[in-house]
Image 1 (cartoon, rainbow, N blue to C red):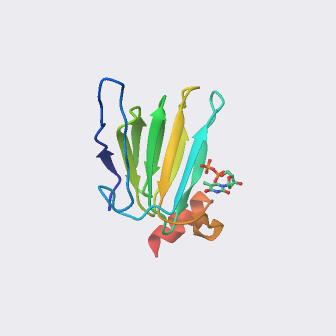
Image 2 (cartoon, protein in one colour):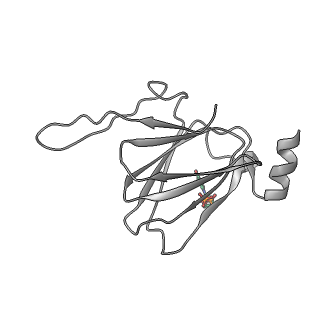
Length: 132
Ligand code: TYD
């Protein structure tokens, strides 16, 4: 599945808004891990890896950042700038996250536990892996 925007429905009332995300409901995988990136220093770029199997959805719950995805042939940049805007990222995409606003909290939902063996951390290795 290609990178896709998943818009979460805000459940709003006079008090404000709320987004609920449930495993396998409205998202294409069971959630096994949640992590968030915050306090990112100015000018920092992170990521620089791809995953062999992992599926993820990233949401900037506050602030914004840019997610650059590369399938080995072309790059696509997605601005994550809304707490209702999720970006689905399947396996096989080299990713770089950049342009974090100081207040950015990037929430990531993942379908697997942390497993370093699922990472490809060299871009050359990624291109080789894509050819297989
Ligand atoms: P890292 O992979 O460098 O983050 P990113 O690629 O998103 O910039 O992760 C930073 C550290 O956190 C690294 O030591 C691995 C560890 N980590 C976990 O222990 N569990 C996790 O779920 C994640 C995403 C990272």
